[in-house]
Length: 329
Ligand SMILES: [Zn+2]
Image (cartoon, rainbow, N blue to C red; front, top):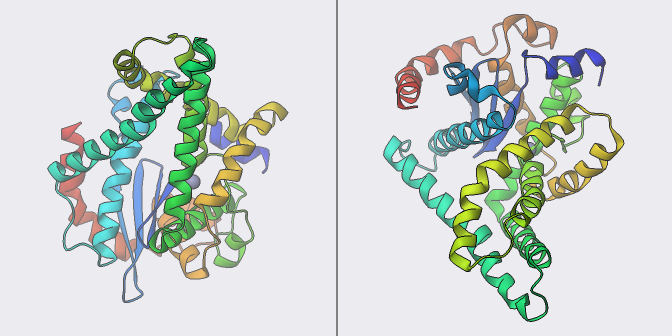
């Protein structure tokens, strides 16, 4: 990675992030979010619309630690919308989820996450109370249990056939971002040369969250079960904020210790990414191209107006949605 691109990352310029969806890839950067999906007929459709972070209106939210919480919340909402869009385009759903359905899905997912990753591990850690009453040791046990549940969950879903493809698209997303950060060109052949693991990844982020939470929760001692569950849920923003700063640092640091700490996250990505087919890389490139400014597209070896036709059409369709999303914030 050349200095030029490292600098771009740390500046306010283009920092691209993405996510795999059903038969497609979402990319976000440059104030836009794009979702490219391979339709059952083989055609790639790209949905692109502007995103305005709430921190543009409330600059205090750009402060370290706060920005992580905002980024996480916003990427959850965008990710879910993009996923819903892809399910429709890939022919798995008849229509996109309404805002109410999206909210319902999100609340259900969060509730499930709280049971799986908060209530069960802290409840089960009580089993170790016979061996030790040391709050630090009990918190450590809880953290290990949480990690085991997380790994088991990832391993379980990675064995599902549909998820295998999603994880291939995840690999395609990483490779494409690597190629972009290395200065291009964004051709299938060149993109495929890059690794499918990326230090700035959601998988790594979740792993960091697991580890940071052990340290944060250790400060609370070992109160009763209900207090433990409630305090952990209330502290999630703190844990997320700290974890975000760490991964941000890791994404652009050459420090050996930081490098070592990002290794487990990269190993875990061997589970959450698979080698993508060329057609999948094509989709990831189309998605990234849709958020790049004209001059960047040219510099990346992409045809200047490649996605114009597709995006213009989908822009219209999503303009009302984007406006609704902005006003709903
Ligand atoms: Zn990733």
